[in-house]
Image 1 (cartoon, helix red, strand yellow):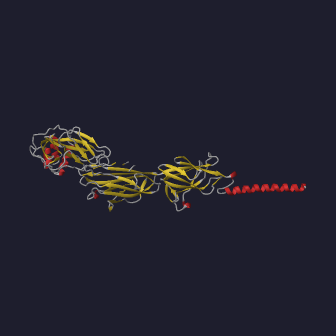
Image 2 (cartoon, helix red, strand yellow):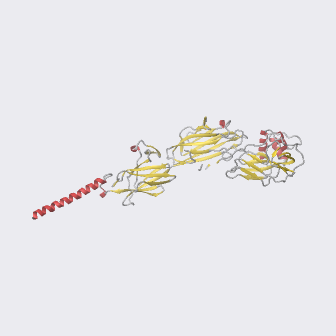
Image 3 (cartoon, rainbow, N blue to C red):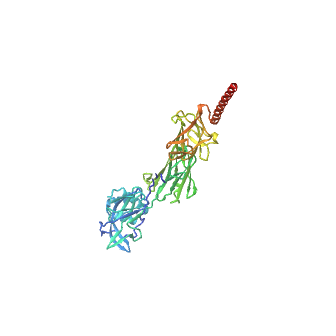
Length: 484
């Protein structure tokens, strides 16, 4: 989509529920805590800022075929022990709290432990941000071997260990197979992609009925607890009740539309279960009432920790606009173009289509030409056609101003395209600028002829001249006879 679209992801907690497999009992013999390392994070990371906090150093590293068994020792036992307590993780007397978290905690407790650590004020080790379209970032400066909390500005905190080294060997995984040094954040993007008549933005005449579609990839219910969609409209009113389908199959929704018919909300929570990674499409129609129609979409909710997801914190938003445009005509005398002509009348129709009428600024199809709206030039020779959508139109002058005439059917083409109108099809019509045209009318002789009587005037003038010539000849002939 062109036009401007905002999508944010919500990180899943991708950590070991019971990662004791691959660990050995905590001990005091430590690996070198200064060995440089990296943490690579993969996923939908555009606009995300990731910050790493070291929570434990490695010790007793044993590597076999690239797999590690090791111990951990907390970097800040007081803060980490407090986080474990908040998460309900039981820490035995003399046990390291990180060891307890990796050994004894359930998946829910590990998730709570990470959330508590994020609030504990641990010393920051490294920060990196994902740029536009980023799918992978690496934390490196300040990272040494060990176990880390990684927070996500648009998601949930995660726990991950770096690769471990010992005796010239490098471990890329724990003995239980879980990777070290990398973590895949499974993003459940709350993405709203709104289109109007199939495009990101559009154009339509005021009074038209246009179709909106809202596409929402369904998030993972293990991360998103509630989901809600809000739609706000300016410059139009809803023409029907929104409907929905998931992967093409109709589903029931209950949109709450306000009394002004300009906004609605719909609770999508009931559609979360069983629809992960499927596509929800909401469809509805709007009747435009202004030359600019703006439609704002917001997708929000809460995560499984109860935190609010909104467009500024992991939610999604999108905006579309529909515009209509104006053009005007200035009627002038073909001989003296400084003379502006009042009273010229025009009608307009879609090219090769219906005649149009305008009521209170809104356009609609007329029954026929006689039902079409008449546009009359004022004292400055001007008339305006306002609120027209992109397209090709035929303008017909149906009545010439006083003392001017139409030689047959007088039409020309007006093509409206994104705020610029071009004119063609008649050498008496010329563009003034991108939205205006000058239309000439030929004057009648002596100002006597009426509209459509130019031919009669010429014929009458010629007949009078011939009669005068004939009369003169007759007089001359009689005088000549008398002289003879």
